[in-house]
Amino acid sequence: MTKSNFPFGFPFCAVTGNQPFKLALILSAINPAIGGVLVSGPRGAAKSTLARAIVDLLPAASKLVTLPLGASEEMLVGSLDLQQVIKEQQVNFSPGLLAKADQGVLYVDEVNLLADPLVDLLLDVCASGINVIERDGISHQHQSRFILLGTMNPDEGELRAQLVDRFGLCVELDEKLEIAQRVKIVQLRENFDRDPQAFIDSYQSQQQLLQQQITSAKAQLAAVVCNTQLRTLIATRCVQAKVDGLRADIVWLKAAIAHAAWRGQQQVAASDIDAVAELVLSHRRQGAPSNQPPPPPKEPPPFSRPPSVESPSLSSDNSNSASDNSGEWGAMTPISQRTGQLDREVLPATPSVNHSKSPMVTRTSNKLGKIIGGQKVSGAQQAAPLSKAIDWFGTLSHAMGQWPLTALRFKPAKTGQPLVHLVLLDTSGSTLSRQQFGQAKAVVQQIASRAYQQRELLVIFGFGNQQVQQIMALQKAPKQLDNILDNVKAGGGTPLSDALTTVLDYQHSQLLAKPMLAFRNYLITDGRVSQQVTGLKLQGQTTVIDIENSAVKHGRGQEIAQQLDGGYIQLLA
Image 1 (cartoon, rainbow, N blue to C red):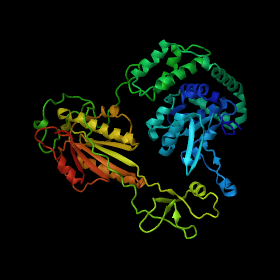
Image 2 (cartoon, rainbow, N blue to C red):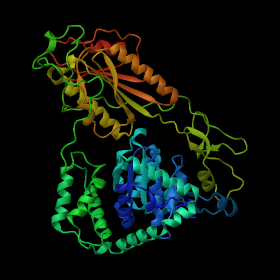
Image 3 (tube, helix red, strand yellow):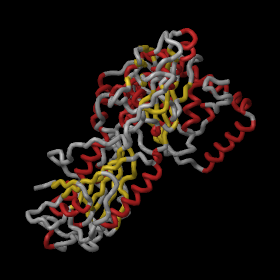
């Protein structure tokens, strides 16, 4: 059995292509302090195969530990040894996956689907290298230093930005294989499936040579130096990439030193810096690559056709160009305005979400007394909301020395509702007056920023040009939306009634799949619509943000807010 815990693991050297991913894994094996590797790519791109195969090239004591998506917090950080408590009334710590992965590899497949509580725990341990467990009067800590490997399919959702940055290197697999390569890969897999042991033996010499090279590079890592000129080059290129903080600079230097050691050199060269640049910057870059021209603009959404006729003048109020009651500009060419800036916080204070829809219920047992969860039940006093799951850790540690048990503790009920910020952005022609559309996009950016800070979900719809389109699919709110918003164009009429109907259908379908979802809706419009919206109240709380900027109001923003039974905010006086 290989160290990767698979009876017949596919050899690292037998994987065809994926050179950037292979390099990232090798550099992390040479210097685990780089911070691990995140690989993003489509299904069937050998992500998991390579991630599991790298452990066979590490020292003999290294292990590959897999973190399942459905793991509990106790499984990850460790738990109380219940058998020891019951038999000997002693509290012993039972190691979790973080302890088992120490000095090895912690592998998370589909890391973007990992539950937030587990992500929080990983962030703490990745930052300190120490796993600290404190609960019910029990305190324990141990070293936990490992190579963190994560794979993900970007089509299945984004990864939290805080965890993305913790990965030292990132690889985006977009390699297009030639027909001959595809045939070769299938043939290799067929040979492996036919006789795994013979296939592994045929690559044994290559595997051993690669392992020796990694060991040698690791041994001379401390002897590699980098001069001030090249350190300045790293800092300059980080500034050009507009990265946050200094983690990119630190990781880049470590990766370049590891690459020089990999080449058997004791001096970092410019080629080492270039070789690892994209691995360091691909998930941190906020500007265009410093050594490449800016990427071409993305294709606009289906409802944002490129201009083909001269646009109407936008230098003054559009009250003469648009109908007084509808604001519909007919078949005018869609026009874009860049995302603007707002000098104040537009959104109201975030109201609390009602997490519990039923009264708190306290469960007692006649045999186990009337102390549940550490709280006495008497008169009007109520315990905190509890689940049906017994907290054996808390129960046994609290009742140390007492047998049989006189009280049970239950785990807190998980009653939090995932919150979805749903944005309805008016993309009709009337919003183009006086840069209203750019300011409307800035409001969307504010909403996204607040949702990002709270780790909440975001979905954006646009309605204009007599169409309703989804601008951004439901996902965890990203840190920046400029690239998406700047490509959204405005023009044509305002199908508000159609937009609300579409959103209602969307909400109903989401609630059927996830009944605990809570919606907070934002309708951003200048109110220049003729359609009535009575009877189209959305699920959740709704706020109408009126972006009309003119001395005389032609829109119906406040009236729409009343019809939707929602709040009203006037963006500009």
